[in-house]
Image (cartoon, rainbow, N blue to C red; front, side, top):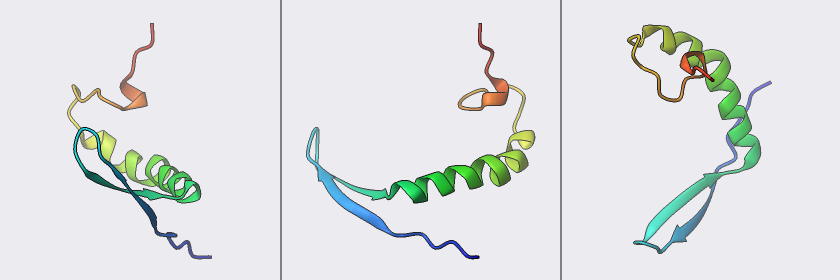
Length: 63
């Protein structure tokens, strides 16, 4: 089984300036998150320095 990205829907935001936004469909975002969490993150996170805390669940201390 092979997964193929469905493409993007395009829209524009005009505030505070004109920006072109290209958005994936929901299923594509779910698949992307699964690939990052299960394959990419376990490979890259151990290579970061010990003070890299932003956006990594393994480094977050919840008090």
